[in-house]
Image (cartoon, rainbow, N blue to C red; front, side, top):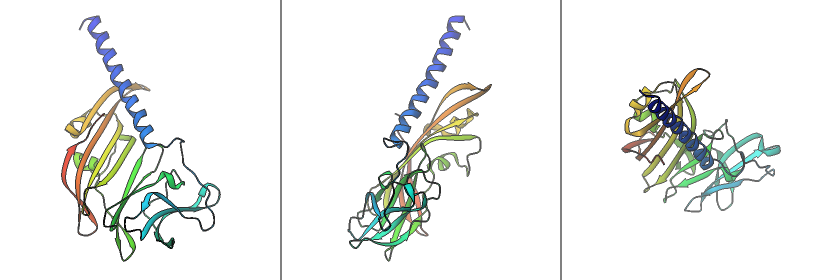
Length: 244
């Protein structure tokens, strides 16, 4: 390879890494509100409804409450009976590791029949999460949501990869089906991960850090999921998602 070719190849590699870093910054902006965290100090009996937290039937809502300054103690999301706004029970599956205590940092997505809802929230500044629930006799129970990343790679755990940023969203298609969108960026030492991800992944790098070559894998997938027996949600259609 000539000197000019080597210089061009090096420049392209650096540009590729730079574009990946820009994508990470963009994703971080999508996941974060104006401030790094959203905190709120609640009154003794103050339960603030999260974004889109009121069910279509107006009989239930999802609200946030915590004790102490900035709700640092015993913070939970709660299922609330409306219109009396009476507390039913906490959603114990959300937490205890949470970044925000302000109700505006949490968003609910209800099915039109008010029998299921999803909650979008953050566990850290760049890592979004989602929980899906069903309603029975005005009480909430968790519905298991599949990991699209693990579904594509057919693995139970991520061992050599560091999750840099993740966005997970759910959009109801009807009362029993939803569109699940998963977009993540991983840092890895193994370029072979891109081969395992196939059309669902894009690999950038390497970037040398402390003498070690690191790669960035962007993963994007969309899946049509259907509610199934035993409080589960099964994938009935899986396609690559957008990377831009």
